Structure formats: C-alpha cells, structure tokens
Image (cartoon, rainbow, N blue to C red; front, side, top):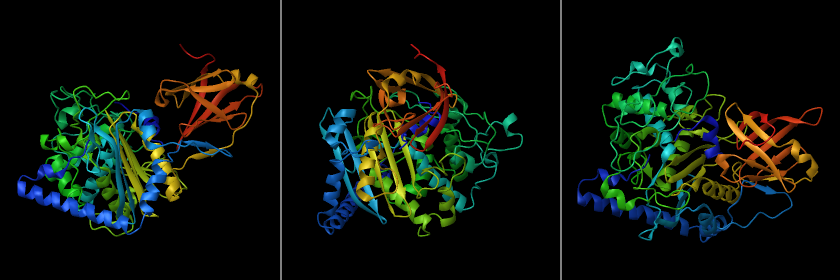
Length: 522
C-alpha cells in the first residue's frame, strides 16, 4: 500500500510485525521458565494496580465507556460512545491497550476476539502486526549502532553498505543518502509503502526488494529528490536501513533486532521473524478487513521487516516507549540522552524526528507512530515531560478511527496536553450561500476533496474519510469542521463573494488548495 506524505498523517493524524521471542527459545525447559517469568511480571503489574485501590479500574472504565470523536461542540455534552459499540461500528474484532506511567506499565487490557472462527479472545499477550510502528523500533537499533561507533548519522551510507549500493544519479551529485535522512524520510527515496505477501507466495530477499526484482511486488527503491531537501515518506528508505544494519553487524535482521532492542528491553512477546514461526501462530490475532471478513488466506508476510515486519503486543510497545522516555531523561543504559534528544527533534519542516513522528511545534513534546498492514491497525505515543503514554493495537482494517477514539478518551482522562477532542463553536449560516463552496478542490497538488451540498448542509468526500460524504459543520461563514475527523477547512472568499481557494488541516498537517471544478466530478 503506497503512502504519500499527507496520507501518512491522515492515516493517524491524530494516521511488520512482532514476534514472541519465545520463538528463539529452543529448549522446552527454557520455554517453561519464560512462561513463569511472564506470569511473575503480570502478577507484579496486577499488584501495582491493586495498590492504587480501584483507581486504575475506575479510569479504565471511564475510558472504555467514554470514547470521544475528533470534535465536540461547545455547550453540548459529548456523545456517549462505548468501546464495544464502537468496535461493532468499525467492524474491528479485537483491541488491546497498554498504558504506562512513570516508567511502569500501569495497566493492560484486551477486548473482543483474536479469532472469530474459534471464538478465541484477545489477551494482553496476543500478538499483532505493528506495521509502520516497526520503523520506530528499527530506529532505536540504528541509533545504538551509532552510539557504538559502527554507524554515523551523517555519512554516506554507501560507505558501509556491502551487499548493495544506493544508485547514484543527478540528485546525489552533491548531497548523499545518510542514515539521518533515511530515518527521517528526507533521503529523497521512493516507495512510500510496501505491500505484504500472501501465505505461500515466494518471498523476495532484501536486495530484490531494493531493486524491485521479482518476486518483489514493489518498484525499485530509487532517489527522485535531492537528499536532505524535503520530507518524503519512504518505507523503501527503511529497507535500505534494514540492509545497512545487516551488513554492519553480519547478522540477520530478526537476530540483530533481538540483540539490540527486543531482548535488552524485555520485549519477550516481540519478533521480527518473517514469516511468523508456526509455534507462535496460536498467539497471534487473525487479520480482518473493513467488513470484518478474514483476510483471504490469513495474515500477510512482510520481508520488508524494518519498515513493517514487527509482531508485538501493546505492553511490549510500552516497554519500548518507556525506554525512549528514559533515554531522553538520561536514565537509559541503551541510548545516550544526546542521541535520544536527536531522535525526538524535528528533522525537517514536517513533524518527524528519527524514526518517530512528533507533536506539533510549540506544544509539549510528544512522540508517536501509527501502523497499517493488511488487517491490522495500531498506534503508540509517549509524553517524555509527563512520563506517560499508551499503545493500542487492533486486528481490523477499521482500527484507525477506533484507536483514535480510545486515544482521545485516554488523553481526556489523564489530562494530556494534546490528543483531546477539539472543541468547536457551532455557527449559523445562510443555506443559500452554500453553492459557492461546492466543487472539487486540489490540495498540495495531490489530494482531491469533493465539496457538495444537500438539504441546506455542506459535505466533504475524501476516500481516507470513507466512501460516504461527511457532513461539514459551520464554525463561521468560512470555517467548517468534521465531528469524526480532526479536519478543519477554511474557505477563502474573493471580493466578488466567490470561493476559489481553501486551506485544510487534518490534525497537525496543513495544506493549501484551490478549486479545480465548480461541479463534483462523476
């Protein structure tokens, strides 16, 4: 699934796999010891919750019975949205959530089914594909190698690549592809997203993916912009990182990720092995489409492991996020504070650091990433200044809006500075003025929004928002907003009262647009 810059932020605007490291344990006795250790950890977490009395349970109940839309109207009570109902609405079979506070997992809960056919429930230990969240975990491994002096953030990666080289062209005459630019999506590389492979399909090698050679199902990863010039989301760039880390360490990618990140952080329910080992199949949630139908043939395999290959749990992602917060505060043994500060610093005009997306400039520091593989949607986030955050994973293609509703309820419950539902004032406008707004608008030269009017109301249609037009509510004569998405559009009236231009904001991302057609295209 290719993904442009705006699509990335729309997927979780607030828009592979993990494997259980038990697959690395060959001895049954060691497996039993690991299971016992997991039980002890779980018991410790439960004891921590119990020490708080019913506080954790009360908070969890308010979250799961108080999911919030993207926008609420001033003076009106927010709608009552219950998790179970919203799961049915979005046709998401299962959800798993972990919340962390001051370096500890405060609570982890799971809801719904991991497998509809067998009625197998989701548990906090159920594995999900982390999709693009894999990039964040990969970034930590890369930064650890920088810390060890095996890599340099700002040198030409071709100096360390052995199995393959980034092909030079007219864009690389002066500027080169560096690890910093790869991690921050500013290397000028193509291939935004990488599709997976159905069970039984032949799997390409890392070099075949980079060259776009069969059996790879993607185009070749190449440079089409001057490195360092601008943000261009590139899963292909993370495949370059995958090969770079393998060439430098001499290890397979799953092995090096286990050694550099998963094992040191105690992410015992995580793995980058692709395909998922058979002994872990029973621990994994099945994948479902937007109709709640099983993905044909089962979950896909992602040999592009660095950008999309992690299998994990929300609790393990919480361990990862906690480590980033600890490193930022200078309290990590894995990563220096200096490198953590670079990781959580804007690397371009966009809201992206090294392997993580960041909150809006001028707001309290927040790092996050979303993920979308076939049949799986997820997101995690952390607030270093308040040492809190959460991870949400689902096994349905409708999981993004559901995760956002959960996240907003958590932000409300814990008083987070960002991520809450936006409050808007509802205005009255003359229905006779609405025809001036209608038409097809092209934003940033790429994204078409169709504005229509019906029965005195204005609507926007954009595929990311779903097939059906969404009602735009007026906040003023020129500003409109959606309830279901953090989307605001400001129309610009000309002197004669006509409208030819508009600005759109979806979460933190702003784009300018112009009307290209007075009537909706059929």
